[in-house]
Image (tube, rainbow, N blue to C red):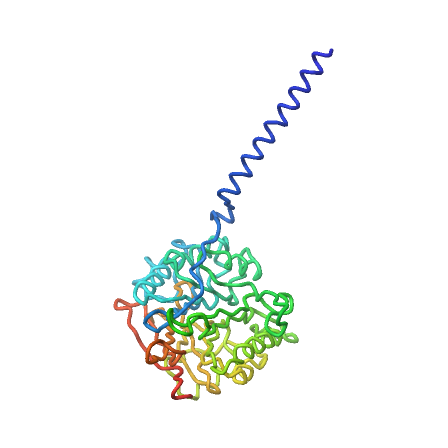
Length: 398
C-alpha cells in the first residue's frame, strides 16, 4: 500500500517538474524572441527610426504625402477606373509599385499617410492589409506617420485599434493621441479629453552642427478628422472637434513663445468646408469633383489662421482633386489619389505630393526654415513632376 502511494507521489511530482520546465522554457523563449501572430502576420519588437527628425546637411526636409491608398488584399484586389488595356494586370500591387517608385525617385526624409490607407470593406484582415499597404516604407527604413480616413475602420479593427496597431509598426512615429503632460495641462491633455484617435505632433530639428540642431524648427500636426456622423437625421462626414482644436491651440501657443516663430504643417483626411470656396479662386492643380466635407463647420480654418504658425494643410479624401489653394493665408493642398483600388479617372494617372521645407543659409551654418515648396509626381512612365510651387517664403509672406 505504502509503495503504491509513494509511486503516485513520484508520478505527481514528476508531472509538476516537467510542467514547470516546459513553462520556463516557453517564457524564456518569449522573452528572448517575443513574437505574436496577429491576423496572418508575425509581429516582433518594433524597430524605431533614428530620432530626432532633423533637416539634412543640405538644409532640407522632404516629405512624401500619400493619400487614399485604399489597399485591400494585394494581388487579388482589382483596380478601379483604369483603362481597359490596364485592367487585367492591375491590382493593389500597382499601388505598392508606385509607392516604391516614389521613394526611390524622391528619397524623402519622411512619409505622411493622410487616411483611407486601407479600404475596410475590401480588406479581409485589417492587420494583414496594413502590413501590405505600409510595407514599402517599412522596407525603406524611413520614418513615417499616418492618420485615418473614413474607410480604414470598415474591416476587423476599430479606429482606436487601428491607430494602436499603426503606432507599433516598424519605423512608425504615429501616436494614438498625445500623452498626458502634468507639467503643462494646456499642451499635454489626458488621452480621453481629445476626440478621435491620431492627434499628435512631430517636431523636426535643425541641421546637425547648426545652433538649432537641438531645437524644433518645423512642427508637423496630425489630426483625426473622423469618418461618418449623423447630424439630426442627416448623414454627413466627420469633422475636427473643439477638443482637438483646443489641444492644437495650446500646443501652438507653447511653440510661439520663443522670439522666432516655428512654422507648422498640418495633415488630416477630410477637407474643411471652406475648401469649396476655392472653386472660384486661383488654384494650382485640378478641381475635378465636389468637395466632400462635413456639413458641420467646426471652425478649423479660423483656429488655424488665429494660431499663425500653420503655413499649409494637406488632405486627401477627394481622389481626383489635386490642387492647392489659399484660404486666409494658409495653403490647403490635396494629395491626389494614390491607390488603384480607390476610385479615380481612367487615363488620369495616380499621383502623390512632395513637400520640401528649406532652411535659410547663414554665414557659417543653416538657420531657421526659410521656404516651403511642393510638387506632385504621377505614376506614368517618366514619373512626371508637375505643378511645382512655393507655399511659403519667410521673406515674402502671403
